[in-house]
Amino acid sequence: MTPVLTMDICPDTAADGAANRVGTLRRQYRYRQAWQRQASRARYRVCTGGDEATMALAIYLLLAAVLLAGTLLPVLPVAHGLVRVGDFPRQQYLALALVLLAAAPFVADWTAIWLGVLAVLAATAFVQIALIAEFTPLARKQSSGFDPRQDDGDAFRLVAANVKMSNRQREAMRAELARADPDILVLMEVDDGWAETLSSLTGRYPHVVSRPQNNSYGMIVASKLELADIVVDCLLTADVPSVVTTVRTKAGRLFRLYAIHPEPPVPHRGTTGRDGETALVALRARKETRPVVVTGDLNDVAWSKTTRRFRRLSRLLDPRIGRSVFSTFDARIPLLRWPLDHLFHSAEFRLAGMRRLAPCGSDHFPVAFDLVLCSEPDADSHPQPADGDDVAHARELVESARKRDEKPIGGDWET
View 1 (cartoon, rainbow, N blue to C red):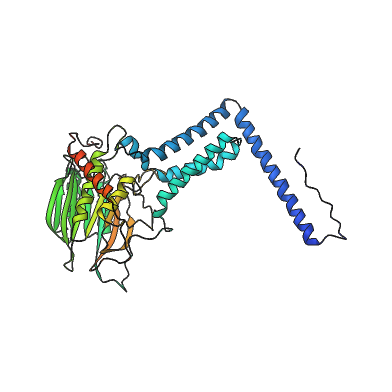
View 2: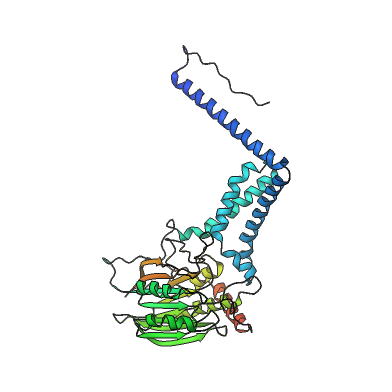
């Protein structure tokens, strides 16, 4: 039997402060007892409430199992969509873990098994936080902001937009891109219809590289800045083009631009094509002697194993680190969004701003980056170093992708 706290307070001998403390303890004790009775009744209803309660308990355990599987699967060194796609919803995993932990007092009976379940849920929440935390203001910025008092550079705006080939809000998208008025415009999923609609916009640009395709991998790069050494190439997968070019700024500074759109992960196919293409671009960017910008819909999230390896290999900076997750897909579903559209840059660039534009019917938000190319690398920007294993693994991925003989994933999705 639980002992009950009782004390006799004599006004003649006890101080008023002591009496107040005892009263506070009594109120806390009664509150705690009431909360425990309420939780016990809830657990009783779950455990003995028949089919509905059994179903609720089953759903709880099923969600916990899904959360654990989604957390652990991406750790496996397997280049397959069924595994890699688990990297995407880390924010959603965190929300689910917190909800399950909050619901635990009304479900758990505090046995050793349940304590183990709760420990696993807490561990999965910690894993998500560890991966996402660097994309919040709590982390140190990897890419320095532009300070006009200290930096003297050449500013330009780059907009990258996956317009979605089947999207019929083409005029709205054209108007939104025109309002953004970028110096460099990178467009993905462009077919002949999109190229025609956007011609009134791209026609204003003196330098245009156009490769429309009807398989969701068409691309256009339009620039007010001079382009040279233009290469349009399917790096590793047939009919999946990229654009690589040298850009000359208004002040005459040169940098290399890589615009890429590798294949997405799907549960029934490997991710060798996507992983190999990003690895190849990282290895090439690593060897560049000029400043570098890599942008596009990489069909991968910012915190994935492959994207983190890309940053280490390329020695490029991610402007989202220390600022924001900057989720760009799916624009149509607010609760299911993750950062698929990227821009990475070398330390010679400073970030003056970044924002999302209106999606205008696409499943991706167009993204606008205001960059400033300075004469010297930023001394406070330190790209993460790669090791020998990163380089060796990247080369293996590239070779595996070259040996593939498969059609691009999703070539018929938008038709």
